Image 1 (spheres, helix red, strand yellow):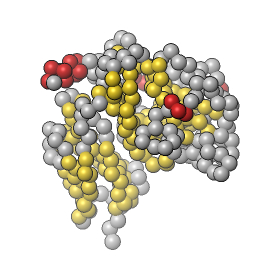
Image 2 (image 1 turned 30 degrees about the vertical axis):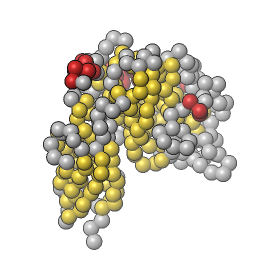
Image 3 (image 1 turned 180 degrees about the horizontal axis):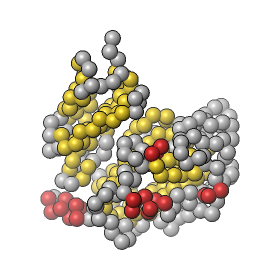
Image 4 (image 1 turned 45 degrees about the horizontal axis):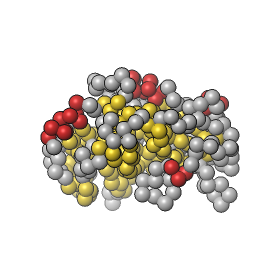
Length: 299
């Protein structure tokens, strides 16, 4: 097992500054927070894919509006500077081709938010995710026509009844993808109709793909507030963890790296909805973020 983990570590491709990229993007573990210029350029090659992608009123961009931490994330926008979108029917696509060397099941997670207009007539707006063979066409459509390749039965569901993701707050989903060892596409799709617009449009950040069971996620998350501090705790067996706390009212982050306990005292927590994140370190890999949201109020 130890030799296998060492082998895996030699083949890791990260998209944060300082990690090595292979020429053909053949990897066993893929981790992307969009902060590395070289990796952003890879995504740029297939933003708004297809000849009709640039014609879509709402397009995929890379920048701060799509970031859940850091300065860059993937997001849909009508103007490239906000999460707002236009009520003009379309299916717009962003994808990244990857070649996972080892056939089998992989844990797949990412941070996302995507609201969208929903009513009794229209139930279209939302984010969809696909894991498809690289040979399959995944072009955008700049009108209400459903692309021939767009089959909801093939979309990843993440334990939900519907594959459509629609929620205005940031959250993390974890699912499983399977590969036969041939090149595949990781495809993010935003669809919206004409009845109305309810932002934010789709935002994606902190993507992680790794062999199933390689890094166990922290569990039993809890928060206890005392005076102006909050003690965030969890259960786990890793040697160290990264911890983040985000206040949605102030927009402020507090970050703690390489924590060797299973708790952190977050000092000076402001009132408002706070989301606490933690991820484990597993022999060179930073695992999936797990989170807990709690409203902080001081009587």
